[in-house]
Image (tube, rainbow, N blue to C red; front, side, top):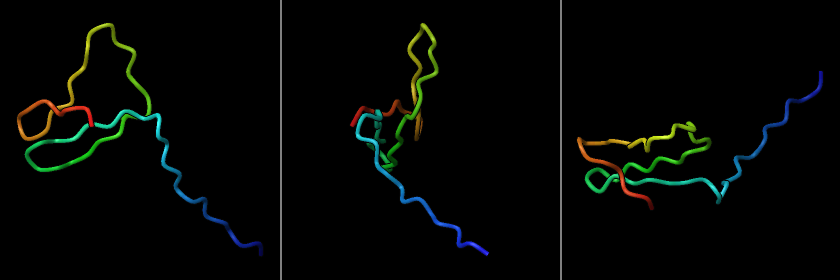
Length: 51
C-alpha cells in the first residue's frame, strides 16, 4: 500500500482578514460572496475590523 501524503497548509497572503476587537477572533475570507451590498462579519455583537 502506498503512503498517503499530507499537504502542508499554505497561508495565502491575498486573503482578507478580519479581527474582533473584543475577543481577538481572526477570520480569513477565501472567497467573497459577490453581493452588490456590503456584508458585515459580526462577532460579540460588533462588526469585525479589517486586520
